[in-house]
Image (cartoon, rainbow, N blue to C red; front, side, top):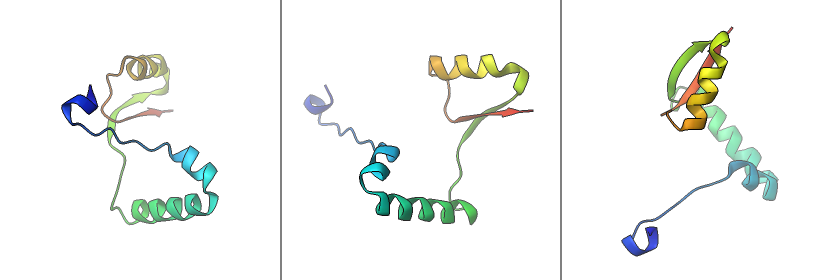
Length: 74
């Protein structure tokens, strides 16, 4: 359906790319690290839960109910 409707589907498997092109993978990870350290990029955090509620976090991931990362706090 994406092709019929004129949509583009774009994705990158970062681990696979880095495996195929190790030198490029290192440079990309260094660039991402630099951006994160200066605060230019940050992960979106959907929710923070205590570690005891780990099952709830995994169920939310499995059900696709997240719009970001889940932080499990000790």
